[in-house]
Length: 170
Image (cartoon, rainbow, N blue to C red):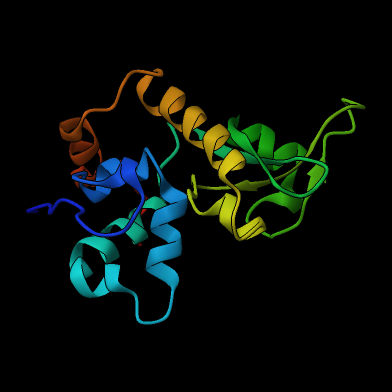
């Protein structure tokens, strides 16, 4: 796909970046722009924006894993971690893709969480409309999980989003 560079708006860290890059820099901005009525982003970057939106909601976890999406006590996102599928089905079946929140009773100080079969980059926004702090945690964990914390260049971001094996596309 031919990726255009962002050249509108007042947010400095997204200027002259492609949408794949923006997803690793400022996904909150992307979701805000994409989901608003009469979205200029969707008008100007329609196919690219739709393509990215579908993929960032369905990032495939590493083999034999689901994803535990954690909550702070104020019900904002506290990132995620992988959980073995067998452990998830054995201990937390009621939390897998149900929208229910669980707590691991083996750990008294355990946070609440829900389990998804995918990494949903929109998860922090689904809890609170605007939450820059949660996205900072989430993006750091995503980079650590997918790229061992290494810097993500434009090419690396584009290659990631163009590889269908990185997503659960149904």
